[in-house]
Length: 241
Image (tube, rainbow, N blue to C red; front, side):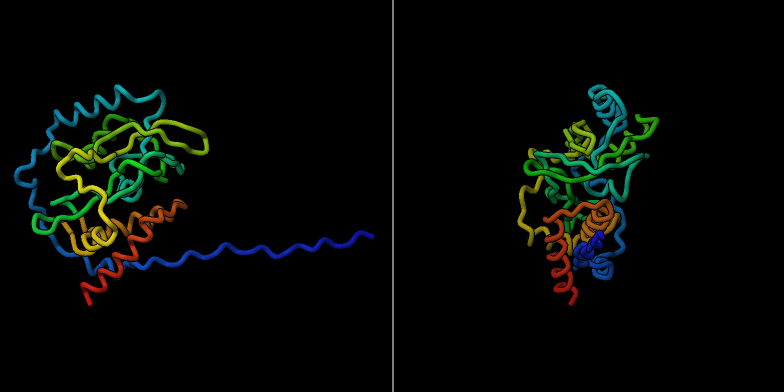
């Protein structure tokens, strides 16, 4: 007579701790800011500039659908229309709050910080396909990511790995020669800026919160951003105590 097979109960996956940075804390950093327009002394990109960049991208694009590597706000506030979506890793690059802004999520009086891909490490994100007509949706993307010359956040073809293998996708990386490049700041300094700076697009804390939340929805956990949100939450609590 066969003995019954004993099956050990399945262990449930450990629950992720909740974010220290909450919507309530983010709300404390939000304020009404009127868009003051282009920053004095900066040169806005023109229609001809966007056409040139768009042409260069399309002329150098690999065969097949044009892919986009999203690692930050493009996950939750896309420009243009994209489709599909699969997790991918871009090696040699990492997320970093590494360039200053005096508009959008900062002001002249209180500049903010924005995120780009900087050299070193690796970055987990999502790869999407830019929908047809590609040229139109690509231009919408460029107008969102690039506003002034010289551009600090520049398009570049990245080698990314998905479950299907290696491919090339368009990503936006920081130009370290740009005057707005802030370099490798320590986390407390970044947290202090994100907890206080805001512009007509919203606050730095909101930008961080939404990025982490949407990465989490894609099954991606960025250890550095997770540590940063704890510092930002603590800083907001201290400033608004």
